[in-house]
Image (cartoon, rainbow, N blue to C red; front, side):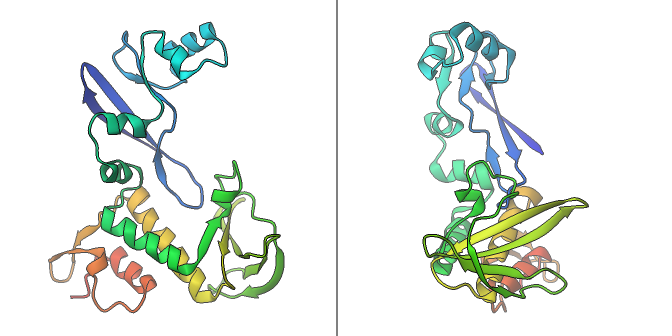
Length: 247
């Protein structure tokens, strides 16, 4: 899934391409390739564009940012650097990446931090953005977290950290492995809360949900963190999906 956004800068039309990657975080991220402003085409190019490919072939495979600048292009090392250069705030840039407002991001980061999560296979397995490989650990016990689903394997890795790992079928012959590393022995509640965090992020980044919504029952506009009558983040997620504020 590609989401294109254009920004005017000087005489250039800058195209920011957001690419959805099917990793376990389901995040939509701004393409990390350098932004190169071609003086001939007046558009932001990536290394896959013909002009830049030609320049790279002429300069050699190991061409640097500085080498590209010598071609007459205006080069920024990454979109983050470029957006800061033209005046976007850090919060605005982060919102473009994950569609989370500052309040939501701070809250979800705090939840994950309080759970004692040290990382996941998506973070720790270099190149495993699709969740095809789990982490290596010694299985010690299993947790039945969801009905009609396989158990969650739990154990310790070589560093002594606890790992909880489960697999979700994503197609008739495809799957995605999620390995969560904790600083303590994980419980069913820990895993449910972490999964709720990921599901909420998915609603924002890939389903177009906004932090504020109009309640279908009372018609009042509410922020999802202000939903009433919720005993847990899992309950809040259910209400949020239904656009119900708890009235």
